Amino acid sequence: MQIVPMRDLKNTVEIERRCTEADEPVFVTKNGYGCLVVMDIGYYERTMRRINEASLVNKGIADYEAGRVVDGDSAIKKLRKKHGV
Image 1 (tube, one colour):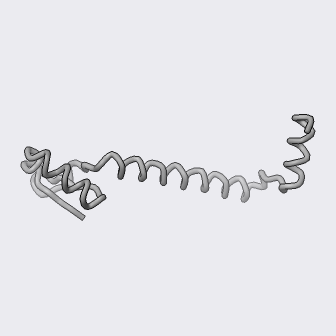
Image 2: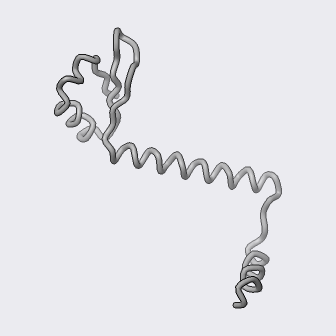
Image 3: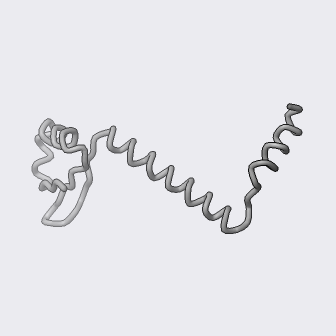
């Protein structure tokens, strides 16, 4: 984990290099406390995709636990009938 003080944000090239090379966010502090997080766009996109995937899995688990499921054969029969296949 990389932590830098707020004053180091003046050197944007160095912050960008740190984010890219380490492939992790850089935490920025102000007066010794967390203030900002800076990250490479690739890291951000991967993180957001993982969050979305985890959310979808959790929704699927909730559906299963609530009994909102259909077995595969029934689902295929229903789709074939609906689309005339």
